[in-house]
Each structure stands twice: as C-alpha cells, then as structure tokens.
Length: 430
Image 1: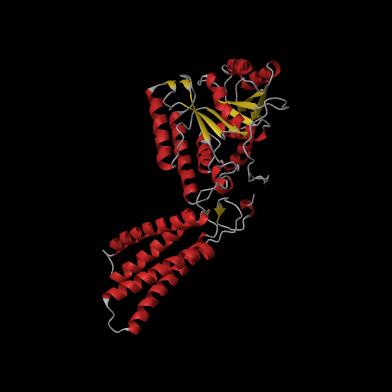
Image 2: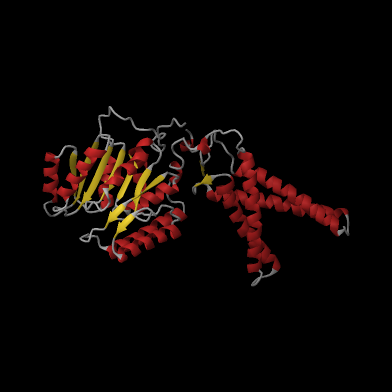
C-alpha cells in the first residue's frame, strides 16, 4: 500500500465513513446559463429526491456561467430558502470552466454534476455515486447507449451521439460508451489530480476528462440511465460537434507524442493486484524474457517487410542497411515500452542511441565470427557456416537482452511502480 502523500500520488481508495462527517459527502453541481425558468423547479426537485433517498449529507451547487437574465437572482433566492444549496457566479461561459472551478474548490469527497433540464431520471443518481463512496471506482458516468438504458430523443441527436462515440473509439481507443451524457461523478481526490491536466473549458471537458482518466488506468463505472431529451435545449449541435472534433484532434495528438504526464496517475492507488507480490506469478525477468522474444519475432517480420519494400527501388546492401536501421529503432522503442515498461519521452533519444550501440555490438559479434571462420578455413563447409552463424546470433541475442536490461533500461526501482524515462525520478518512489 502506498504511503506517499505528494500531490502526484493519490491515496488508496477507501470507503467513506457512514456518519459523523462535518462536510457533505456529495456535492452536486448544476451548471447554468440563462436558465431563470428551469432553475428553481430543477433544484427543488433534486433536493427533494436527495432528501428522500440519499443516506449521506449532500450539497447542491448552482454554477452560474455568466448569465445575463435573472438566473443569479433565482440562484440567490434558492440559497436562502433551500437548505444545503449554494451558488457560485462565474464571469465567463463554459460548462467545463464551471465544473473545474466548483470541483477544484469543493471539500466534498464525491463530486457530481447534472444538466439543469434533469433529462436523466434521478433514480440513477444513487447507483452513480455508490461505487465512488465505496471506493470501488474513481469516476462514474450515466450512459444512454447501454443496452438496458431507455432513451427518448430524436433520430438526429441519436445519430450524432452514436457517431461521436464511434469516433472516440476509433481515434482515441476509448472504451466508455457515452462521453457526453450530462450525468457524471468523480471522487474528489481523483479530481484534484486529474483536473489540472484537462484543458477544455466547454462541452469537450467531459470527453477529455474521461479519456485521460482511462489512459491513466483509472476505473470508470457506467450506469444505464432513463433519458428524455429536452426539446427546448439551447445547445448548438453543429458548433458543439465541431468543437468536440477539434478537441479529439488535440488530445489524440498529445497522446501520440507523449505530451501528457499520465505516468503520475497510472495505477495510483496501490490497491491494484498487479502491484502486489502474489506467489506463483512469474517474476520480472520471466516477463521481460517473454516480451523480448515477442518483440524480436515481430521486429524480424517488420525487417523483412521493410527490406522487400526498399529492395524495389534500391540495391541489396542499401535495402538491408535501411531495413536494419528502421527495424532497430522500432525494436528499441517496443522493448522500451513493452518489455521494460519505460513510459514517457524522457531519455528516449539516449535510449535509441544506446540501442544502436547494442545492435552494432551484435553485428560485430556475428561478422567477427564469420571472419574468424574464413581465416581458419579457406573453403568452410556450408553446414559449418550455418552452425557458426546460429551460435553467433544466439550469443548476440543473449548479449543484446543483457545489455538492454542492465545498461539501456536498468531497473533502479524497489517496487513494481511503472517507470518513466528517468530511472531516478522521485515520483516513482512510494
């Protein structure tokens, strides 16, 4: 179990105490912009539901996004007349901006939000936050695309929603089913670490938060919801879709180049079974050997494909050299990430240079063996050449693995924490 309490390491998931808290367990945020008509009935209905069904102290926070109608006055009246309701005024629009501001300042251990139209049936609220209270999950989302969900909305919105989630699965490899349902919750300790990494301040905020959480290895719980679309919604579908696609491109590019510091979030809680010393599970050396062999086999196939391609427009020696160089770079990158578990871009160039040195040592060993054979015998038998090459390549492979393990990617950790490119990064310590 981790004991590091630095801001980059989250504590273990704990079940929240059932009673005796001085602060609300749940803070439900309702972001609004010019919602003077719907705000009052929405807050009253939500408060009545929580008072009847929620067994913990709660708070409702109205986050006013620079409204220009009577929304601020209505929010102030609700604060004075309904227990457990407060409001926060923001000078700029943006749902993501409102959620970031309120969630970052909230003292509640579980944070949630929902749209003011209450399109989602409130009976899903307790199932949404229960896994967070128990410590089972880190985030929770309502899903209109789950099989058991019951949804009433027009074909246009249905198509856009499904198409958008298909785009997320294809481009960002997202596994959650519904990014934009306005019904989500997150543990407060997770939010404090994750929110600074989220750039968007508008509608893409939800998607970016979920993608980063999923890439960091956090657990996302999905709840089927009953949903009735609001026909009077003021959301501009085309503009929102365009902004979302821009966000997908930005996040996808950042993930591709390793620009996001997700290593500090990966498996952060210390209660992951992969972090435990379970008897009978193969050790690190066995896993690395298997990974090295798999990467080696794939690299050989990659080399052959490259050689065949280069050979169509260049000579034999040039094609061989180019294919060896490109496949060697890919081999080092694959071994870096998959075999030895090094993440991030730190020292990546150095690792590649060291990998090329290791390759050169292997080539020198095999070439030297053939040269020695040629010096010993003017006309060696073909079987002898093959035997010498096999022995030399076997020795070169063993030497390559040992050099990668001991020199290129030395493991200086004392536990199973995933490594970054810097072996002595203090964030790797527990």
